[in-house]
Length: 246
Image (cartoon, rainbow, N blue to C red; front, side):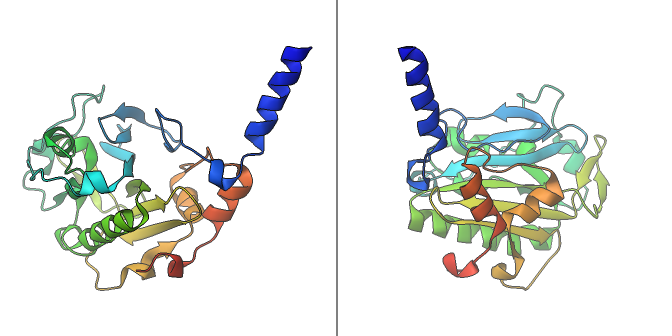
């Protein structure tokens, strides 16, 4: 009877945790829930879509240490050996007219040679319009790094939205997505989503901000399900750009 009582107290204590007590699982963190083959690299995890030859999502915890390292770009783009079905190849992008756009940016993986090199796996790439990749997408990546430095840590999820797709490239028929998303959580009480079309843009970043619920609706991905339901609904259902100092 005593064991049963202690078990009940333990379960009750977990169900009553507040926002200040929330900690991601040490092994998986706040990984999203979705279709796709889970592939774990040293500092990021992804869910690979064989049908689209790219990730449904890439997830990692962004810290000042990753940003402030002194490792330079390796530019060693290559197939991902951990994708069991085989990832996209260099040949798929050659002559396509599209950039090999990072989902987890190289600039977020400057800690050492391993982290930098792993960011160039083609499983972490998606075909992006050049003006988008080198423009508004790059601006957003810089902004996210500024926030990570300011808030000491950010949980980041990035991926394509396969809606209004532009077409396919290469022998492996890599999908050229119509849109991309990014979801950010500071681990406490700030969460925001962004959806950007795969096209050049002169708009300000805050104009792309959306509730995380909207990204879940468009992708079918469940973000931050480890949070208690009340907090998850509160954070994912609302948007306040003033919280983020764009």
